[in-house]
Length: 135
Length: 291
Image (tube, rainbow over all chains, first blue to last red; front, top):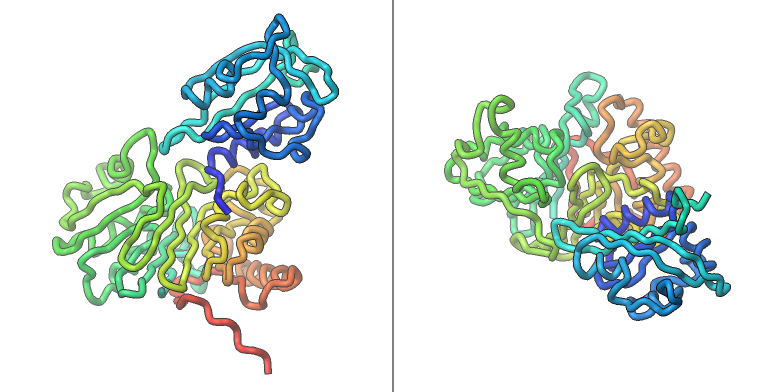
């Protein structure tokens, strides 16, 4: 068993308690967790999907730009955060498991520690919503 | 490997007639490795007695600090070997982006809190941030990993031949987590404790006390039991006793821990409460078969 870095463990614990959709990737860009709110947005719970490699998770739910074109992987906020170690923000459309498109805003920030980058977190808001729950 | 508990109390020294059996000194564990070399885990007030008990002065001594809360460093300026020029002391601890380990410890070992400064200590003292990778001290392999507590905090694992000691004295593994449901890799500290001969783990609160202390960085009895079960530790000592807990209260806590452990199918006697000055030889021998 390889222990996850504490910062990822605490991030997951926090995210589990949030009603804001949130995604967590490790330092290699592997999607290691998303919370129930994100699962509701995607139409699939994390427990059903499991961890997803960096070359796959982007294509699972789009994302698409305002013209409906897929956004290059390198430009996704989570990828910018984990690769470049800086926050990133974007708005785009994602496709849920049932094919419905949702317009969202996403902010991602890196998880930096004394030992360097351990990954990144992204939180999603439904576009135009005043809070992350969409309520 | 031999382990002696010099301080088992958490938070603040609590001497007095009501704590005389479990002890009132704060965290310190002495570890004698298979080649006779010596480690001290934490430097609470218990390290004062450890220093006085060293009959022959070791040339080199390693102190492994889990974190820098006062109950884990308060004994440093009362550690007799630190005041002898022939002693070399290496102090290991967690890194912080804010300041070096030496500078952070010097905030305590300096005026007005201390009559001496770090630079005035006669011994040869050095400070090292624990590396991410395993390292060696004498015959032992040492591993440190961040664990869930307030501020930068480490747990340690020490492997020496067939013996392994996991030391996680300040730990709230269940903060926002279900210890019975999560995959092992997502449980703070579990990688350190996996199959340890002896696990020394935070057991500060009763289950009734914990709801008023969520986020304070310590474990409830249920959490400590769940953690030990998931880790598969051969023996577990609950440590960092709450300063408000009397010997009688700790007796009751220990009985409850043993009962619940057995109900979960655990080996009788494999969990207990840490007692100051108690000694433990590792690996733990299997209990004799009942006749």
